[in-house]
Length: 159
Image (cartoon, rainbow, N blue to C red; front, side):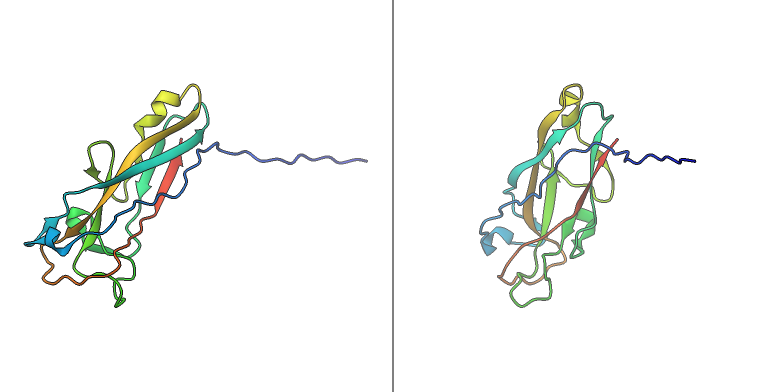
């Protein structure tokens, strides 16, 4: 008597999405005169979605609640990394944008990436503009100079 079996995997094809770093540069305090002021200069870069397979229905991105939490959730302004550290800037946060018009990011909601439509039948890569800027919320009464880095985790979905 002999027995047999089968082994293997069923996988879902995905795109490759490297980490994204948005260089913010140096920003002077004079940028934040008054309450609720924004640095009007968006720091933009490109979010690359690489090596996508043929035949997906859509590719989506969801930005999770920022790692350090919210400084002004209503306006999508999150706290800087290590907010209680003496080396971290105080009184400002970061607002992110996504898309060609610097539309502020909607958090915790999957957003389809329209760039996949152009390569749906051939596969390949596409890119989407992404940006960030510093914001001084209306609740801020005091600014302190220091490091002003932030982080957000995003989740990609492939259907």
